[in-house]
Length: 410
Image (tube, rainbow, N blue to C red; front, top):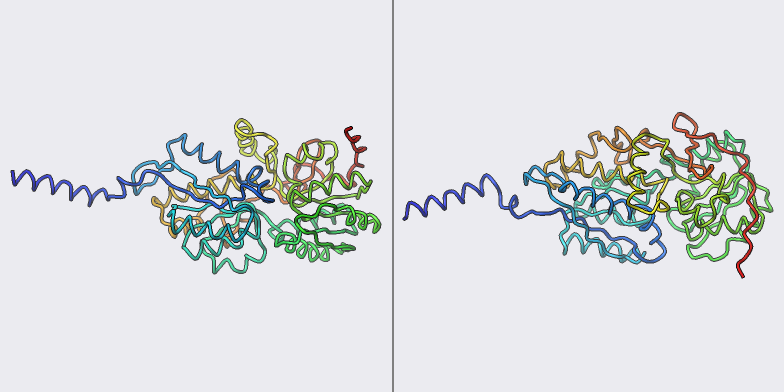
């Protein structure tokens, strides 16, 4: 009997040496996020990264999960998402809670440039990997060496949207512009970089105005731009201002030769909000479409089978999906859930994604990986109008006149 008990104990001991306890106890990967499920930023949860991470979780779990060599099995993914109500202080507190109290394995990013800026510091303080989604900050670039766990994927002001916009405007013969920008980090950075890039191309900025996030009437700004007779009107604003800008310009008969929209102009839903014929020739930040590559078309086909097609994002959806693919492949290459090891793999290796061969340079998605920087609505498609081989259609200039506003409903 003593020999039998000794044998059993020996087998159990050897089991724990060969197969650590974690191999038996770990049954899922829990990913936390503080997202704006309500408040002014909730639009992005519904139309940007939100639909994608949910789709990714379902697809990963349908395949049994992510294979992690340390546990010698696939681990399904579970999301724990809190509503930060579009409040930055709430967002940072919730990230701390997810990491310290809930002890999630990973975190996904919050919404907006300013929130992402704050979240990067929180993630790095805890040694947690954070790959960005809806946001990108010029002011973060010089801080990246001090934020080793943070990666940016979305193209932004000088990475490389405003340089490309200035090149497009130069090609089209734009001489003068008026700029309206939202009074937050996004608008401040975009307007600042745009002014510098327009100066490089000898394009004159004749008006620049800031807008609070909750402005109700943009007609005074549009009327001032109209009085200046500028070639192009630019709105670096979020959808609650971006969409009314188009409809107000139509209503007052202000039809500049070019209209460039910030976040909002890139979303498929703008056709429902403003009218598909109304936005013909309107430009936006992005861009990509089903003509960008066979992989892009296959992704869109899969997306619309699951989601409302009007939630497509022609600025971010391809790079957000890329980020999720990189995240999964890095975990599989690491063979464990160690943030530093995964972070080092992302920083130094190449990945096969929807964009093709994909890599990061200085913690930012490499310039060559993007499928476009500036788009324009043409016959219902958000065409890439960047100069060069990634262009999917020649830009229209001047843009067509607005159609007559629809009569008010009685």
